[in-house]
Length: 355
Image 1 (cartoon, helix red, strand yellow):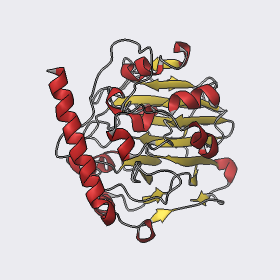
Image 2 (tube, helix red, strand yellow):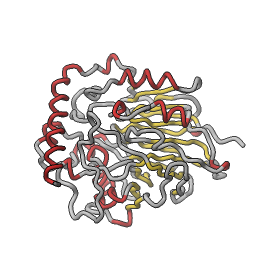
Image 3 (cartoon, one colour):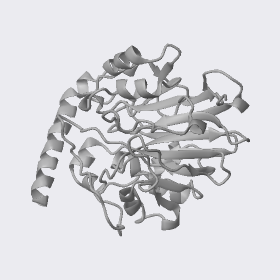
Image 4 (cartoon, helix red, strand yellow):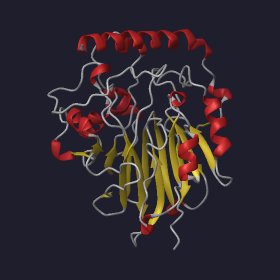
């Protein structure tokens, strides 16, 4: 039965890749898309630097957040194995030279948050943590922890399953050492990849791996989480709130739970996932109505099968313009959105909670 399921997934994966190849000539040029690209200057919303949160998009689901002396990162994805590499079922491994060249400074990162464990999110994390973010702890599902245990000391791995919010029930806040950043994991889901099917295994793993997974099918999903991330001021009050998703989800999965009054604050920045949004109902409408964010970033929109040396294109078979149209139909009147190019830096003003 296990072998049969593998064959079904593999053949479905081949079909999807074939469709990607067929439609490769129909990929919208980013020259006709509302994409922000800042190679030298920071995209500034408003406010002075000392009163801002700096956010850099690292591609796919990766973001680097920095405020003052503190930094947090979501799983960076830089290697971008090609479709043919994935289809051949040869060993997937980090392109270390590419990561060395493109990864920004992350030595001060204390926390690495992983939404789910597919290769396009987790593949580069072991190398980054071993060579660059050497003081960081990685957080995610138990499955993520079992994968990471093959490459990173277990003292630097924390599974959030028992701390996570479930439905309307809040979870437990997890703080950095200085208590200037905290986050709450929220149970969410990963949308199907194609025609209502998940083409990669969900897992889970129930024990530590001895070696990192060899092929795309070994990087199983595990439980998918969204994250509510708070940057705190010197008094411990919420200065800036982020809601992060690295996978589209069916409402109300991934929504902010019912928080106590002292933890209530409008979401200042929502990070959405464009990939596979048509495979679930009411995305992004449901999450936008629920959290009413002030700012919105669209991520996981670019073709992550393309080598980083090639021009960036929109993810094949993904109608980004339709996503934007649906987003704008439900956005609050005072909200704004951006769709950044990989490695674009953005600066958002602090909007501290008022009593």
